[in-house]
Length: 324
Image: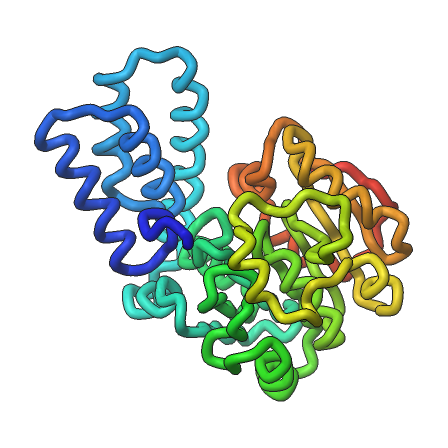
């Protein structure tokens, strides 16, 4: 099961904010708890972040944690800026829907030149940053976007929330819905970490124009030599439908969907998974320097995450390196 302190929801956000204020009020510093809370507040772009950040600076003189703290400050600057810029569109009520793991959310756009982005959220109901932050970035750039959620907490084994209770029925419902939402625009699916595998499979089944994966696993086959996620317990794996226990390489080889994969240079497992698909003609694999599993993070800091996703329908040389 996913730790509820880490799985995004309205209740989770309220809990981590209250826990942060309580830690400061009581003046009781716990390093592990403080940094877990700080990371979650950064992902949410929460106004509680600077309060806890200042308290940690006063309480912890560990040189080892300073760089991590500084990175979280960069996260928060980017996430809070995105939320403030899109406040008129990503309202409090929209944010509540985005934080609800059982509810798909769609934002329309009047810019017919921008592709529809279908975001497959992770087992933590986020995309490293909160769904509200990514929605803010996408809507500010003029993209229509659809956020689809994983009610099973791993690999959409009970379907896609709001679309069906199995993978196949969910894909059929999405296939019937997307033409109405896209209105002739290109469709790009995207997923990070635990949602990347499902985003690629869905993009192929839906005949999307492209899919962008960040730090994805590309095989759930019982015969694969590639390591599985540490989150995927044997019990969870047993619940995955047999049809989804596959390797992406042969599935991709039989499709026309363009694929861009990004992996952090500091994560060897993500690197192995990504490079194992580099021989597939329509797959472009890019390394993100100086980062690990959180490969969307450098793009978030640089303000280029949306452009990176939206550019997926443009051909790139195989193996082009992403900036880090």
